Length: 200
Image (tube, rainbow, N blue to C red; front, top):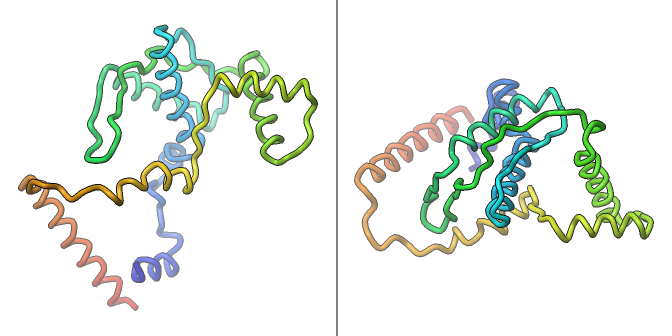
């Protein structure tokens, strides 16, 4: 860890954070992370209500809409698939992913988008302990009790995945191919760590 941190401190401009250009940066933006959760929530609501999704209305934001449309298309093509993510991990179920592509319109041209904006504004005020009228509080809770929340934060990630640190050791040997890949990765890591240490 020490070598990596020293290198990062000396080379902050070389850190790509998993993206090498503007388009890639959009793909890992909080906006796109949240949009994945929206699509998953739509799929789960569709399954719970035994209904087909007829339309997905999204606020028009030129910077993000292209990446949102691309992500929605990827999820659409995954429809019907279930994937095992590995030991201790939940199964990824794409069975009910919506088939309809999102429609992008200005927020002031959709009552639904305006209601979302008002609900989010109210949620922020409540979170900040700012005053709101009884009528607006009732409006907020009429929406909140029908919905769901999913936090995007380090604390939420820790809560969701902490159990992975306590999984039992595998009782059977790892497949030969996986063992070879892990050994190769460890060899490369050691070589890279040696190179970094040599620079300092």
